Image 1 (cartoon, rainbow over the protein chains, first blue to last red):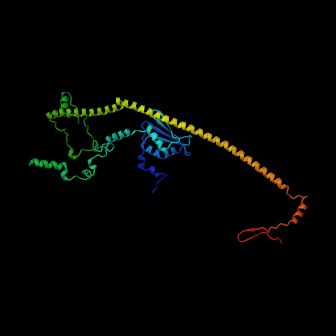
Image 2: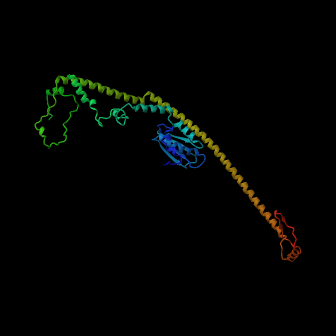
Length: 174
Length: 207
């Protein structure tokens, strides 16, 4: 049963979903410059090791690039869609501080996230029946405990419209 | 199969015809035009379903009204959706919101810049301290090296002096006879005794 890597917990869905940095829609590219050795770059290394998977999971359309040993001090750079570049110095900081700082300056706030979740819930009402693309189910026959689809198993005679019409006609005749 | 009825007949036909926008054309079906007609359909003349004029008139009116209402409703809903979208993007609230967002963003960027400045100052101080330490270390190392060199020289001088001292006791050709005489005159006893406790006794009888 393979557990791959040094901290295989980073590969679990639960860990990824716990990530709380959702960046604003304006941020398109995130660049991380860090060093593989040195005391000052330790926070940056831990940030890359632990937090980047969470960030990518929560921001699927964000491009993240890592550069190693290119500059003496580590930093983050965010490229927004109007050409603005945001530089964040990481030297000597702890990885928790870095993630909190990033969340503060470029992350979506709690209210915005909740409003978005609400909107999504409203759009996807489980009471709607329709095409798979837009709704959960297409017909009531798909639900457990309901009458099964007459296409799969024929309905009992008493439930068919034909029989009921005949009964109604017979009753009217009498 | 579909004849053209011209003149006044057209109005009547229009009144009596079911109000469909698109006429359904005859579809070929399974057989091509060269296939023979089936035996049971040999003399068949297809007749359109009979139309009751009064019923047709009433139905047309009702259908017209019904379709007008449903079309109006549909368009209303479409318009509502479009209006909402428009409001969302270019309404008065949207401008407020975007302005507020821009301001917040600017404030956050200022905060970030201050943070960066603080880090920069810390870094400058740190580099300064490191440089000073390095310089101190270098100076100390130089002093160490100087001391070691001095020690070395002193050591060598001491050895030279020791050698000079020893040189006075060397046996040379002139001293040879004298030294032999001295050696013969004073016999040295190299024997010693050790008891069980490990005490060494150097004074033994020479035989």
